[in-house]
Image (cartoon, rainbow, N blue to C red):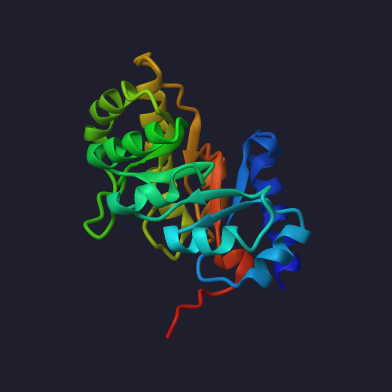
Length: 230
């Protein structure tokens, strides 16, 4: 199932890139493996996947010891400050930095291990009360404050768009995130080179690609419906 699903997802990625005049290599597929067993991840790896996304720190810690070392782990879920120490040095990207206090904790823990954390700033572009993320008008100032932290590199922006039946409804949110990225890049803030947009999930990743996504986060489309512990 996983192999066939990946083939279909890859076809759709290529088609979306073609429609928007982009190269396939501009888009990284993150296979969202939260709650999924190692066996399904191994099937995805056999099909060529090396980038996995997890919502929880403990799932990365559990899975990384059981899988090959050449995996890029992306933390895409809300990160609590008391969990930063556990994840320090173990991720290719932290997608969900949603406050200055969290960034300060990341700086503290990465300074200890003498590494640089590559992060994305989570923006609540749709202004949903149930979602984490900075409001768009707060984002530039927060980035300016994070930019002075020597052990953090801000790589771009991330959003979780609303759940909608029609993916076209989320196009405006993806457009707004891209516009925010362009606006902030135009300010030439020191130590910031933001060119990554993490947006789009199983239901709307084609629209996200058309609007400039460089990371898409696909779980159900690859692995099927989520399985939660009873």
